[in-house]
Length: 290
Ligand code: C5P
Image (cartoon, rainbow, N blue to C red; front, side):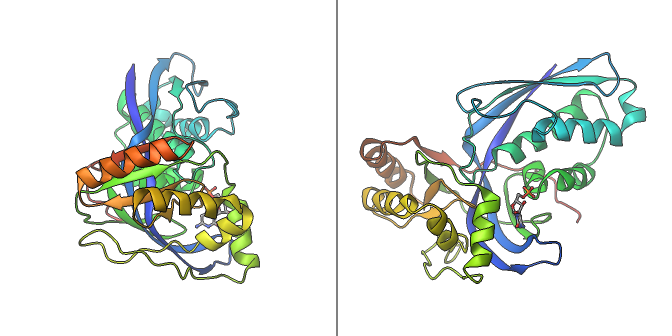
């Protein structure tokens, strides 16, 4: 048995460069793994070849399917198929405690898929490299390769081209509004609005430079309550917020932990929504080779 933390991912900036021939969008994003929220995965070996069982629990589990379409199940199936000889007739039971809210732009499903790849690789001694795991992950979802490496990275292409980034120690206030957003719906709105570049540029933390999220106008078009929520958060935090990924969570990055904690206290009291002040987690520590 092995347990693994699946950390949420947070885009500090997200530039959408255009639409690709495959319909996906070409991205240039600066992304970090944050300590909270995170899901908890426990994997047990089964004696049945290729068997994948998934059991969900936790506050973010309601509404999430536990069938073969769940990204955690898909990742396990893909890995067992890829390494069938080394898996030696084993299957896996996955117990996933879900705490990362769905539809918040925090990459919960992708983090789970990456955690499954890493944990099953370790439990069954499959001995695949991170590059190999990330390549399997890229077939599951655009954000899975980043979640395999974790830490801080530039994501390019569809999201599968990962380069390690250096970011200073950050303290991020994350607030999740009481409504979710659908990623495909936000990208569709970006197309329909003519591919806008966001004009709202916020100063980044020291050493990171100005930040913007090009999906923000599209997300605020799809869900008009988002702008009101973001502006309320900004008033309470006393600093500009940015949308996380395709939303609906919003985040404010601070250099100073005391300022982050104080802003977090005001936001928790003023917003009727889950808020947390989180640190950036370290990655796997291994340089991606591609
Ligand atoms: O890759 P993934 O299945 O996680 O993407 C979910 C949806 O987000 C896609 O169906 C697509 O609508 C959109 N997307 C995109 N361009 C990207 C990543 C995601 O259009 N680079």
